[in-house]
Image 1: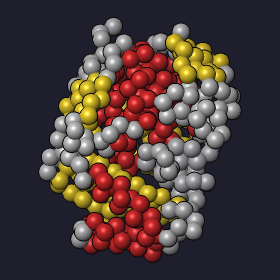
Image 2: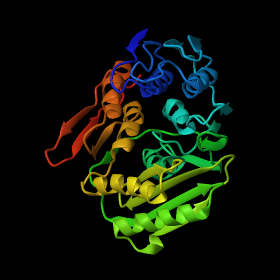
Image 3: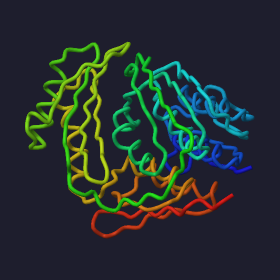
Image 4: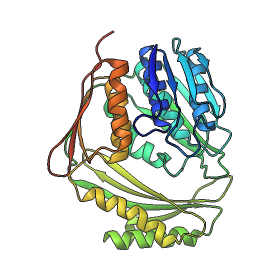
Length: 342
């Protein structure tokens, strides 16, 4: 059984989610200690427990330590059982982070899957539904593993209650991915969304973001989302020839709409100042599916702690180590070896 120190790397929930995905895909059991030791509130939260419960349910796994606040967990997977599943976090925890813990293994399995995930859909410090559908899912489809994602209802903190549906057709195969240049930018847009808040907030955000970016006003849109509680998110979408990136900022009580827009603009502008096709958040989410399939390489910005955590964890399950090298021009090349047969 593989032994993992949960305080290593980014020291949060990602190492748990990645370990679950890699364990499901390879059949290798693991034991993790010091879970989320780097966080103010260590141990498993509801979102992490949902990840574990989903992985256990879909593979008839044997699990020890899956309780709220637990700092140690043992996970022994069984064979994956394709079908339709529903998992409710019971809070505003991120549904897309739950997907991160199970979807890579489902793509490797190649079966037909239908998932309904209930919780948060637009969370700070987590991939939003827009990021998943516009940035990550198209690259997975290019690798041979298309996913149909549907937002039935948005979920914001603290109410949650969002519903995301993910459908994976049978026969998926994770082929090699090579992504070394962005290509020409085809479309640029700002989408400011609100739920149970004045639409004027979203209109001010869209106007501010397009003005700061030097884009025409027609590149901005203000929309209302159906959700159980109030919420606000700004998404800046840059669609290039070879990859699409999404940059988000979330509204908070007491924070002006213009300030929310500026936050998203700063992240977008920093990325566009480089030639990297893959942003920092997309980079850490590509490594696991690439390592479980045909491997490949991509150019990104300086690796975050989340990305470095993935680079260190992957070889412990698949035996071949991905690498990240500084190209000296503000970009990095990440190379991921293909998974060994068997």
